[in-house]
Amino acid sequence: MPLARDLLHPSLEEEKKKHKKKRLVQSPNSYFMDVKCPGCYKITTVFSHAQTVVLCVGCSTVLLHMYLELLYPLYELTTLSLYNDILCLFL
Image (cartoon, rainbow, N blue to C red):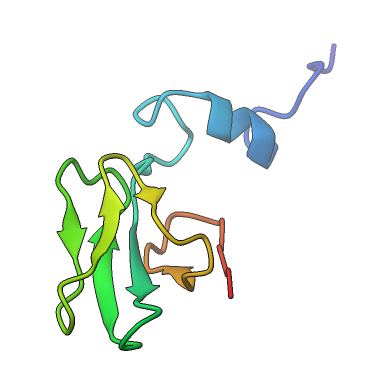
């Protein structure tokens, strides 16, 4: 009797719903990304689950608050994690 679903090839949606350690291949939920400052256009690398205020290296502008609350939605974001399939580009 065949199984109702393929256990060796789960869909991407099924894997995203599972806990990070219960996936077929363990992968983190967090990732690193580059945030470009709209004032001086310098790029700052930011952790996705940052719990501190992140400032721009060049002009000391506040880039984001806790938990990725971007102050300016027109920043360019690119993920640097190999495990995260989401590529966010805002410009």
